[in-house]
Amino acid sequence: MVVLAKPCVTWLYKSMQFSVIILAAGQGKRLKSAIPKPLHHLAGRTLISWVINAASNAGASANFIVTGANNSAFIPHIPEDAQLITQNPPQGTGHAVACCLEGLSALDPDHPVVILYADTPLIQPATIAKLAGDVASDLDICSLAFEANDPAGYGRMITDNGKLSAIIEERDASAEQREISLVNGGVMSAKASILCQLLPQLENTNAQGEYYLTDLVMLANQAGHKAGFLCIDKQELAGINDRQQLAELEAVVQETLRKNAMMEGVSMIAPDTVYLSSDTEFGRDIVIEPHVVIGSGCKIGDGCHIKAFSHLEGAVLAPDCIIGPHARLRPGTVLETGVKIGNFVETKNAHFETGAKANHLSYLGDAHIGADANIGAGTITCNYDGFNKYKTEIGANAFIGSNSALVAPVEIGDYAIIGAGSVIAGNVDAHALSLTRAAQRTLDKGAEKFRNKAKSKKGNKAK
Image (cartoon, rainbow, N blue to C red):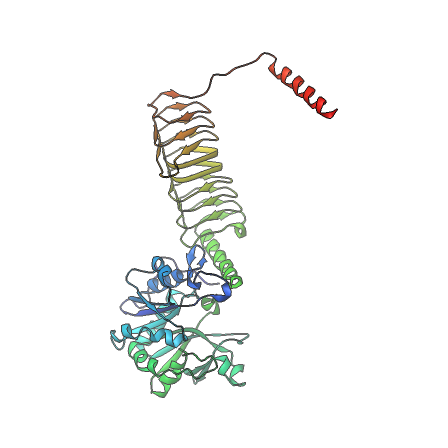
């Protein structure tokens, strides 16, 4: 099982500077999607973000990101200092890296460069750092490899006494070479000077008619450079080409995230039914019931209890909150200690102070709710007029009666009471009682008269 990297990872080569090239021009045709493959999500994070995060945690000093012709969609997902480079038209992995030659030529000749793929999100920081370190200390070029039970479809690693002589793509391999079980993992590192020297020498005289990055190994050996390989766990290099593989990798990541959470003190009654995001932050002694979804941007404090069928996204929970069942916390929700959000309550951009509670059947958006306030069933904050959004302020210890509509912008003072069934469009002072209920009328024996009239009407229709 792959151990997912946490935000802070001990870098193996702290004194070493290295750069990464991330190849992200894949169109994902087999995904049947208008979205570029690297921008599909895994556990709430784009595939390319996983790779960028791993490179950053490994200590990369610079990022070259190679995309296809339309790269505007990538901008929100990459570091501001990354160099975004266009490969158009795509002519193979070697051509993609060659698109970075201008930037590579500005680097120190011995500067290590690690070439990564945006669709292999489980690559680990330690592996990236080791690749860079091997080039910095001993090799001129180094490739990742793994032993495959079924090597079909992979490039074969041609070795000689532990040294890497060449990488042969399967379509170009002989029958004897296809029997080799040590296969190419795709990821490679090399000195900047080696890339600048050898990339212009690549040729596309192969079955694909493309410029193969793997041909650099053969060219390096011919030029007298030292080539080697690093053998790792196959799962680190698991790639994504279609939606089935995306789902399979999602399952791998979810299993790891759940196990990590449980090891850190989170109890899950039915772990396989719980969905987590890669950036979820947990405290200790948290209980998560079945069928809970925790989306991106959530922080959950000690002792919280998330009940079944609840959905959280962009929510921050202080300790000892109780959520659900069937609650929905949307982005901007902040819950202080001991807040209770019950069944079929939806929150958005809502800040609940300590001890506040909304136990059932409410929508509370763009709201600030004071300490120990009680929000009755069916209450809604009317925060949108079709053009703009407005805020509702509810004071400490206020009591909002059931089925009330609070028309923002509006302020309800501390200890105020809103009568059930009210529509409140004006401010309510502290300790005041406010209601807009129509006067109640009671008709003596009115129910009996109504039933008799209804029966008579029904009987006439049946004739």
